[in-house]
Image 1 (spheres, rainbow, N blue to C red):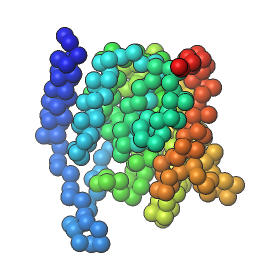
Image 2 (image 1 turned 90 degrees about the vertical axis):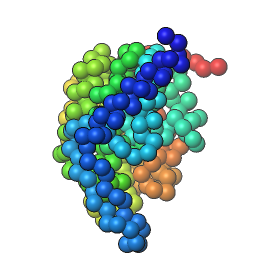
Image 3 (image 1 turned 45 degrees about the vertical axis):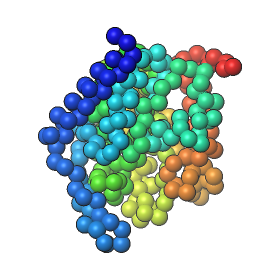
Length: 274
């Protein structure tokens, strides 16, 4: 089978799975407009530890692309998460991504906006299969579960979100038992809306819970949350974008510097790039 036929086959399978799943799920409530001019937003409640497909535009296309990448294989380092992972390999941060990852066979499977239940669905529907046999999987997920509303989704508690992280780790163990897992703590978030809803405290509580998933052998927990903060517990200038959620290049440097020794231990020294 040539590559074009393979890609079309993967796309057809993904489309069929998404269609079948969406037929069993209620449609998302309408999103309200700003200033009270639109219909009221009714957040959906989704179990954080049960895989759920997203119905927003573009997500199924990203999933299909990830399935195609999984079929290609040749991945030693597999990155899994939401926009904080997704953004590293795109846009203004490609130089940073190359600096920290180009010495290894790396693939970024992050999708912006994902919550634990969405990552769980993706890896249960092909994104950890195909021709993949990664040596290391780096996972960071959970920040989108915690705000009062994230798109149309209701907030989860730290305990519910931690259950979602554990479910993801269980699927990784089932589908890629040879892989070591670097579980990264959720980073601080500190915009006014988050602060009013207690999200910074929820992030800390979540990190305390998921730290317990480290087993001393296959799963390692890396907590660099406080490296983004000053002595007063506020974000250091320049480490986050204006939304106080997504890292800048300086923020990614904090992350990259912290993971390099661990990845070198697990994968060997990165190969020099021309």
